[in-house]
Image 1: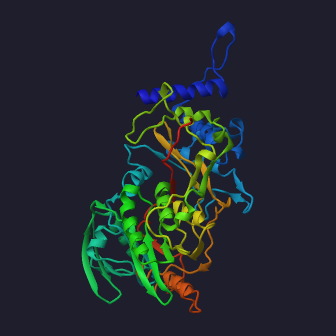
Image 2 (image 1 turned 180 degrees about the vertical axis):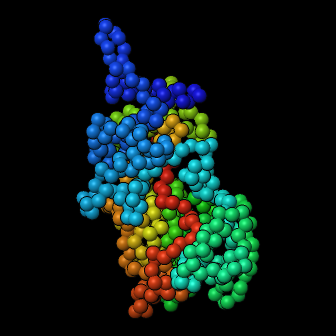
Image 3 (image 1 turned 90 degrees about the vertical axis):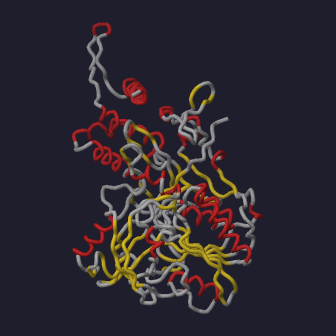
Amino acid sequence: MMKQLKWGFALCYLFTTALTACKDYSEGVEVDTYEPSRTELTLDSIFLYAKEIYFWNDQLPTYEDFAPRAYAASTDDLSIFEEELYDITQFAINSETGRPYEYRQGYAGTPKYSFIEENESNTSAFAVLQSSYLDGTDDDYGFALTAIAANEIRVRYVVTGSTAYKAGIRRGDILIAVGGEEVRADSNADITRINSAFDGDTFELTVMDQDSVVLNTTLVRSTYTINPVFKDSVLETSAGKVGYLAYSTFSSLSNSQDVLDEVFAEFAAANIKDVVIDLRYNGGGYIATADYLINQIIPSSLNNRDMYVERYNELMQGGDATILENQLLKDANGDNIDYRGRYANYNDLDYSEDGNTFTFSKEGDLETIENVYVIISDATASASELVINTLKPYLNVILIGTTSYGKPVGFFGIEIDDYTMYIPNFQTVNSDEEGDYFDGMVPDFEINDDVTRDFGDTEESCLATAIAIITGDGTTARSSSTSSYSLLHLGNMPHTAVMIEHRRTLKQ
């Protein structure tokens, strides 16, 4: 209750002094004393926060022209707030495309980056993502499917350590039956049955592997510890040893660091100069973990050189986004932080370019990498794209696959009453000032995702292309047995496109 009162006081003060007319009767003059509803105050707050901290805040209209409270006559509160947020995100236009930066083809009414969620005891989708999946645990079956033909459904990925992985299911396996009944991709009833199985507590299925070995199993939904590495290996080629790492998510360092150390120790022992980083399903995660991967790849000669800058809007850089004073800063335990005789707030943080320029700091013993081949898809986003963009000025980076998602922006959450809003607060640019890949990174070699083979299989189309380039055998592109990447995907991707910045520095 105290939290809500404090929130209400701060916002009412802002509104009554700057935006709304009120009624009182001082000196006998009648003034409008309309009291806004809780919904109207939240609508105001969404716009006013965007007006100060949205990365493209300078392209937003005035409060009077936008009129946030006009949305209050709509449906339920969350839908109202989502509608308002979508409209806010459509003002900033990318001059290169003529479309809003937050335009997303095929998702009318949904911003590409921004969203708002209701806080339901930390059970919102993004809260769960941060508190469980990105910290190394999940409670699903740990696999997903792709239909590649009318009668063929393949396993797209299996999370290492999951229920499906322990049962022996692997990427490339063919799904034959669910609940003892054969399934086909061209049957709506079968698709519905598969999706229902993903939602249930048990999943009875039959799959067949590359060697035509049939597996009948019943998976039980349970909590498991995630290994974020799909597959790693040192491959023997005619040009020497090649490192391969398929990495599912930039989970917390506590979840990712040990496994990355182990992988790169093997690469260092093999003295590899070529490495294939498979990020085709990696939607991002923690920037600190992305930095850790980058620093495993680069040589120590790059220490203290610029990696990238997190660039905030001019208002935030100048310390003038005063609305952030309403957001208290918390430590790792969720406690308030003492600062200059009071509790620290988000306006006390350093948003300057100097304070948000990050430099290389070598991790591990691998010093020999010259060429980095990155496998990408439209599910490659955020922190994954940051890794690619950061390495480009310093190493030979070759992209293989299909165009990535396109998210060079990141955010932190803004609490507004019972909701948390996420809107782009900063853009990352590399040491060459490059970072405008809002429509995605285009591959150097366009190859469709080959879900017929497991990660690390040298005959899988994307990996085979990388090896062909490395060995110079004259074939620099291998055709995929799947005709298109825009195929029917069943089950969830590992997670949505995120680039989360938890590293904070208070102004000195």
